[in-house]
Image (cartoon, rainbow over all chains, first blue to last red; front, side):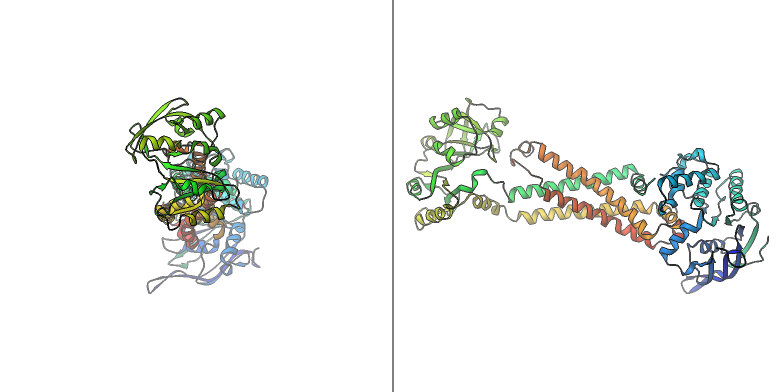
Length: 231
Length: 381
């Protein structure tokens, strides 16, 4: 649940340090930021600025070296592997640059994957999948395999998969990086409507200022440090 | 979709590889079952119904050494004996065949039914055999093989005696554990080959199982310190004495079986590792959406296990079908009459397959468990 200040994500003095031999490399250096519920936040910065690292920590697929990252009040760094996996399943939806759909599964089955871990009945799972596909406008492609879909359609299936467990947060790492401009706009439009209409908190990493324009706020990172956030 | 169908789709995503994996398991397990079945057959020969009451009496030094025919008078007087017959190996070759595929023995034809009652023939065939000196009876398998029938004549060249004998087939028998042999008159052998006065060995039947030990002891004692000492023993002991001549067959077969299984494990583990390696990014996604380590291990294990058991079904099932419903004498050129795929052998092969499926999944599961989501997502296709 959101914090007292309405922040669904609250980051304090977060650092991520890698060791390269004897050298310490700070991918993130004492970052502090709040993200409000329902925001569409874009993270921008040059390559190696730490934006993906920050995204991964918020999403619970990486751990900080120092500092605190609370998502819906839960300090994700303190959860063990099993708890973190459960937490991700219920609270986070992932959209990646390379779609990452399972090639032997249909669109319907790909979207259904996160639900296999729940106790939902087959009928309920089907309903939720159909709802998710409808939200991204791909109900008529449910039985198609990924190779039978265009890039934009694949990414929308990935968004449907990210939505199907009704998570509070959608994280998207360069979701339009492999798409043409029309498909990119379609995908970004879907993400925007999820934020504005469905109240989802969307956190997106992007290089593209045009993509960032879809967001409600942009944060710039450089060399692991936060520059002034802009709205 | 269910977890099971997800696993099946993953297992079959590369159909060629899945098929080759299944076939490699199937062929290896077929071989394993065949080895175990043959081993069982040669180390534990099947027992005839009447074997419990039969005693073999042979030269104590060697089976190849004959016994004097005059021993019959002494043996017949031993209390507890129902019937006794000489039994002499002829070693005849039929139709210039390189290898003999059926044995020929001379015996007292009138004692056939008493001692080897399992052999089934018509009454007329029995009578004809008993009454016709140059007659013989043939096992059904041999008769079928050479398309021989009652009334035909066959000629055999002995490889032991300097003679060839011609026989009239008086009957064709079946119902024994080895329906291949030929039996004829000892008297005919004696007259035709000059073997009068000696026999190969004696076969006798005791009146009851209780008589057996005493009969054996009496016979052994009767000829102790004579010029032709004998070894009297039960039929089972006699059969097992042949097996000890083969050497340590069990160790030999176990060695081959171990090599087969070990190679299979290497192949299966390598294949499974390759299959998982190709899907590291997908597995990272599964981790990201909430699949825990144990669930991913379960997916990999189920896939590996499933492929192994599919191969087992094919290999073990194929061996069972072949040896149970096929013609074993034909397949083995008469060397074996029956090859029984017992539940124990099936269970052993099944256990090997199950263990294989588990072992093959260990290495890839460990690598997936250790992989972070971030590293997995960075994996290149």
